[in-house]
Amino acid sequence: MLLVQKFGGTSVGTIDRIRNVATRVARAKSEGHDVVVVVSAMAGETNRLIDLAKSAVNEPDPRELDVLVSTGEQVTTALLSMTLLSMGYKARSLQNHQVHLVTDSSFTKAHIKRIDAQQLRGALKRGEIAVVAGFQGIDEEGNITTLGRGGSDTTAVAIGASLKPYAKNNLVCEIYTDVDGVYTADPNIVKDARKLKRISFEEMFELASSGAKVLQTRSVLFGMKFDIPIHVRSSFNDSEGTMVVNETNDMESVVVTGISYDKNEAKITVIHVSDKPGIAHSIFAPLAEAGIVVDMIIQTASTEGYTDMSFTVPKSEMKPAMQILQELVKQKKAIYVVGDEKVAKVSIVGVGMRTHSGVAATMFKALADARINIQMISTSEIKISVVISEADMKKAVEVLHREFGLG
Ligand code: ADP
Ligand code: ASP
Ligand code: MG
Image (cartoon, rainbow, N blue to C red):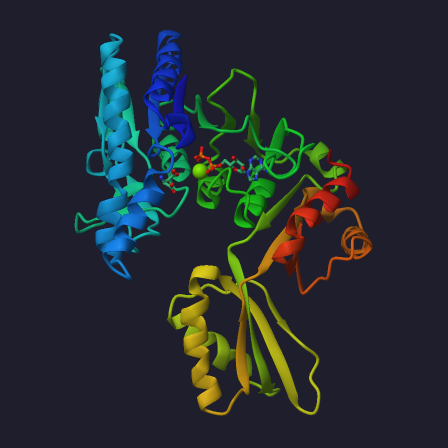
């Protein structure tokens, strides 16, 4: 069997922990498995490097930022490989150019285009443990790129996909992290959150894309597309974690599987725009051109031909978005634009929502009873999200966790 074992920052945060990881990797190898290891930077290192860049210049150039932050992962590959070698195992560190992990050129948020798995296959055939740097890639010109925060998860699942033919479908991608699986809500926020034995790719995708950072969203998409079983588990114990798998019929009997929150979005409201065809386009086209991703959108009922338009953007994009929208004010197409950073999005997710009705009503009543004001709502087939004040976020997650019987 091929095991792709990914270890997150906390799991490789100190030399002792790297030794612990080496022991676990060595055990898998001794049991006769082919092992590819993907590592993150040591805990806090990526943040430290980003801060370093920001202390050098106000707005670091994205290409140079990627050159800088990718070093975190390189350090871990070397430390883990030398530890494995000293234990008598054949191990070899491999960086982005060596595993030919090719991405587009969107520095700091690159997408993987392909992986030429030849190097990895060679290493495995020689009986080596391949220790691969997560998070990083190279573009077609050979520039170093990175895959966005949490990107090592995606490296691991994508490597699994590229080795699937070699492994003759007999593989698992193990994501080792600081919690022992995927929970009904972030266990660091909700005390009685429960570990899930299994979760469907689709539910995991919705949870990840609405803030649950236990897996990077794109890693779930790779898993879904290439049918790679993902096992999320702890690097500190041997207990079974959570399997992310294809949906089965019985999954729909549970209405809500999990709750997520996201503090990384800000709300922008464009006040008093005339309510006529083309107005939404004139607001959102310049934002799209600037590469700003808009999430939830609501337009209030129009009075006397005027309306307000609210929407959310990533917090880091609030300032540039507001600057762009000032153009509308200058052209007298709106009176003014306000931004609110003190908001949070809370989402409930479950494939059971497809077949159960009244889920939204239950959610809204629970929030109303807790005196939490809802500012925005959006729904999809298996997810309902609300934007509320950031101060109410923890309470909202707890209330909903209780209301849907998840504890
Ligand atoms: P790593 O460094 O190993 O990649 P991350 O910090 O990226 O770890 O992801 C693990 C964290 O995800 C946990 O510590 C937890 O706070 C958070 N998390 C959010 N939602 C969930 C959830 N539903 N289940 C488990 N963990 C969650
Ligand atoms: N080190 C990178 C980060 O902190 C990637 C990862 O750990 O997945 O975002
Ligand atoms: Mg992570």
